[in-house]
Structures are given as structure tokens and as C-alpha cells.
Figure 1 (spheres, rainbow, N blue to C red):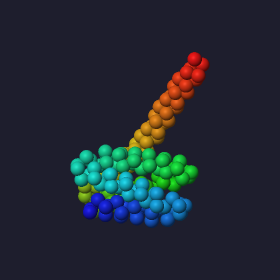
Figure 2 (cartoon, one colour):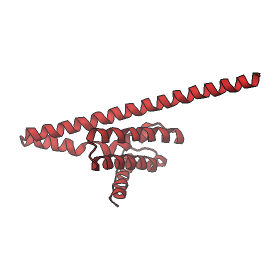
Figure 3 (cartoon, one colour):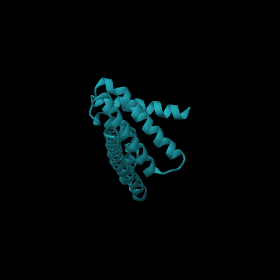
Figure 4 (cartoon, one colour):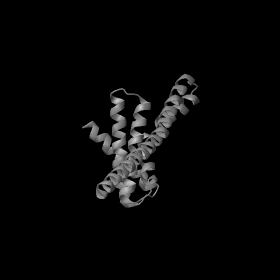
Length: 159
């Protein structure tokens, strides 16, 4: 039940942000699903103690891959799905705690939260890069297979 609640709330937050930044209405539900799926993956990975960095990295890679698929399918720019999709992962709570603890002169705790913000932000960036590499690799393999099958078919026709 908690899993569905996490998915639903993250999806609503993603759709809400999509409305704020004025993405096309036909993309809102898909963006919400992408945000919900990515947050659910992030949340589950945290629950099984896989760490902030790996959780954010995996969830962001999923966002980018799903955004790429949705963008091609709906013939829209990928960024329409990427930007709202990362909203649930943005470390706003940790950033707030960092600033608050610096203001209260709890520097050790503030530095802890600063490290978490850096970890998550870095993982988000690397996750998008990984998805791009996965897409390029998939395209390259697909093109190579297409060439081989085309070449094999043309050799069979010659014989």
C-alpha cells in the first residue's frame, strides 16, 4: 500500500510541476508516470539500504530512458519529460537542512547534508549521461545487426 502511495504522490508532484512549467497537456500524464516510477524505484532502493547515490543514479537513468522512449513515441522533445520527472528526486529537503544547520551553527550536521546534496545532484547528472550512453550503445548494436542481416540477405539473393 505504501508503494502505491509513494508512486501516486510522486506522480501528482510531477504533474503539478509540469503544469507550472507549462508542458503540453498531452504529456502531463506520461510525465507523471515517469516521475512516479522513478520515485518508486528510488524509494524502494533506499528502503533496502542501497544508498543515496546508487538510488538516485538508478532512478535518474530510468527517468532518462523512459523520457527518451516517450519523446520518440509522442514526437516531442525529451526535455518535456526529463525536467518534471526529476522533481521528486531533487534534494530540496537536504538543501533546506543544510542551510538551516549552517544558520544555527551546527556545521558538522550542515556538512553532512551538504554531502548528501552533492551525492544526489551528482548522481542525477551521471544518471542522465548513463542513459545517453545506453541509448547510443543500443542504436549502434541495432545498426550493426541491421547491416549484418541486410548483408546476409543480399548474399543469399546472389546465390
